[in-house]
Length: 181
Image (cartoon, rainbow, N blue to C red):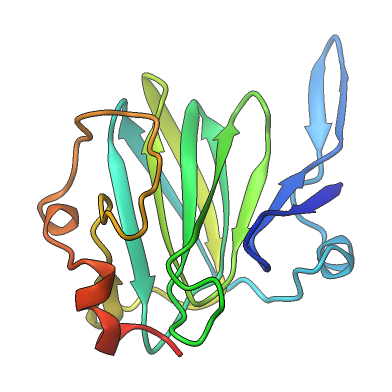
C-alpha cells in the first residue's frame, strides 16, 4: 500500500496494491498495522454505503461532539472527494484537499476528525463506502455550505443535485461557534 499525505496534514490518500490476472483481481483495502505505519492509527466503528446519481453533491458534513474520521472509497463509478479543515485552532483552517476516487483507480481517502467531508459524483452513478471512527449522531449532524466562497472548493461539476439540508448549511464564517477547536 502507498500512503500519500495531501496538502492538509492528516488527510491521506491510500493506493492499495492490486493483484490481478485473467480471473479478476484481489486487493487488501484495510490492514491495521499497515495503516498504523502509514500514519492512520484509528479504530473504525461504523461502515456506510451510499448510491448517488451523476452531479449529486453530498456535503460538507461533520459532527461536533462526536467527530468522525472517515475512510472513503468509490466501489462503483467515480467521485470527487473533499476534506475541509474546520478546526478553529488549525493553521490550515478553511483549507481543502480533494481526490478523485473511483472503482477504476481503487484509491481511498482518509479524512481525520475535525474536518468537514463532501463529495460529488462525476460518473453516471457512484456507490461510495466509508468507514467511520465514531457513530453517526443525527443530533450532532452539522454542515458547511458546499459553495462557500471562503473555502472555494473547485468542484468538477456545475449545477449539482443537492438535498434540501445541503442547500441551506451556513457559511464557514457563520458557523464559528459550531466548529471544533
